[in-house]
Image 1 (tube, rainbow, N blue to C red):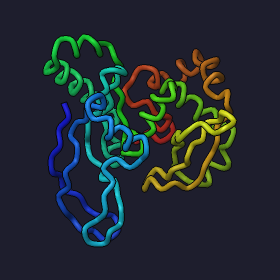
Image 2 (cartoon, rainbow, N blue to C red):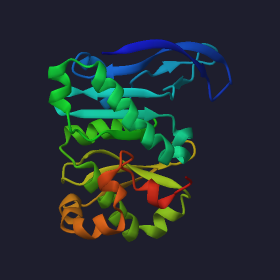
Image 3 (cartoon, one colour):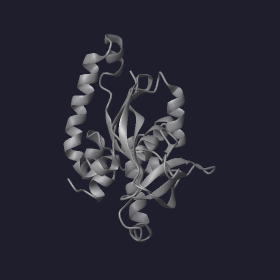
Image 4 (cartoon, one colour):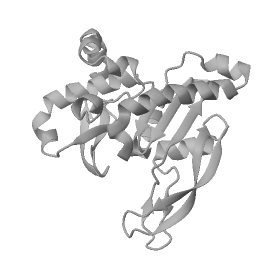
Length: 229
């Protein structure tokens, strides 16, 4: 079921506050037009009534896509430092939704691994990765390998994260470099076409060194790079 309600929103440019109708939960199987907006990076984008600056309000939301056995809990980026606590709550959210779901629906997604993402941008990345058939843990491992090889370039940006955007014509994984504090896109880095295969070949080592990527809802290299919990 998809639910919408009014939430207070503040413009980051002029500080104007208003109530915007935003999704509490979104069933991607039922409203495919909204899924396309997420993939395009335009989901819930709206102008500030005062200064007309466009923004995507950050807020908690549950995204479900039963056909793809997908459950994604989105939180605002400002909650990232509390990811360990929020992860524990994600299990309760999933359990509560299973209890309310029809038996056939609950059985169809039983055992599906829930995801926790912070911010609209990372929800977009999660769905783009899903559509591209990318394993979330292996994508993050590929990012870690890229970080090791491009440490000097990435460190000059300060705290940042790689965000998968698309495959280019050569099969490379085009990633935006986004400032971790304000989410601004500050650069671009392409991962080699064999980046996922390389990560898969090193999976045993990553399972030992970065086990949470394979077991916990917050599947992000940031949990190791910038652990503030």
